[in-house]
Amino acid sequence: MIVRDRPDLVAKWNDEEGARRWYRLCPLRREADGDPAEPSEADLGMIVNDPERLAERRLRLSSPSWMMRFVTERITRMANAEDKVSGRF
Image (cartoon, rainbow, N blue to C red; front, top):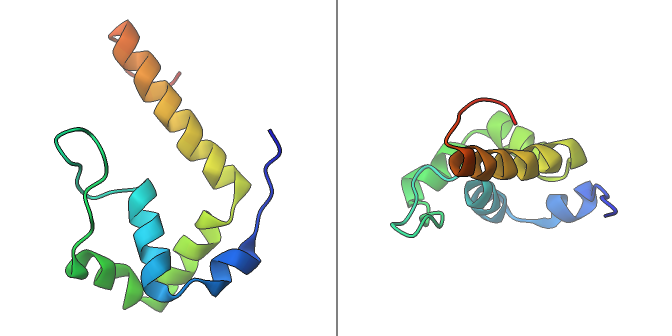
């Protein structure tokens, strides 16, 4: 796998798009089937109306190290559930 950061693409997103993409990766709520729930306007506003938080989220969305964090977290959760254990994978 080749991973490349693309801050130029992230910078082109409007503020709401950046917030929506963040909540897709880090949802506040989940649907019954485990999929991320659609964020409310208030949820989006927590990021969109805070320039520092928005800038931090944009940086993380274009970071290969953060992408790997999200990938390994999911794998760890699945492996721990399968083995009925908790903690680091």
